[in-house]
Amino acid sequence: MTRGTDAIGPNDAACFQGKCCGEDERRVFQHKAHTSAGFTDTYNVTNLVYAERYGSVTRAISREKELKKWRREKKVALIEAVNPKWRDLSYGWYDRYRPDGKTS
Image (tube, rainbow, N blue to C red; front, top):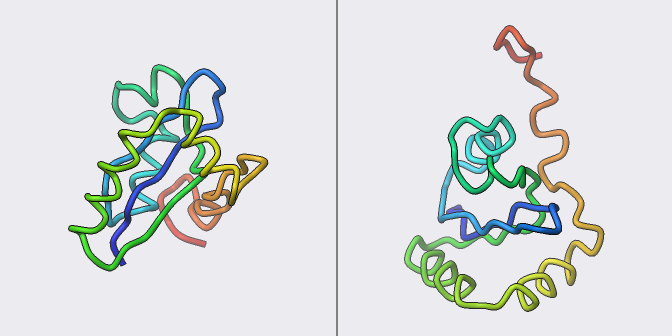
């Protein structure tokens, strides 16, 4: 399915809303590894705390644009409705990878 939108936190000072993406693990890893300079690197927001999925890219982009217009308080309420402790939803995704690049 197509990735709709995500929020990467939990830094209180910053909350990043990601772009529509079909490669969840790769995109979250890029944030965690700070592979490029930008908002998430500057503010160290690396945890996936909310995500939505859509079967249609058009619907995913529409929802992304809708959420981008929301005030921070409304976005926080949305996240906390499903993830009140702001736990990293990607926890454990990379456990199967070893430093030598082979999977376990």
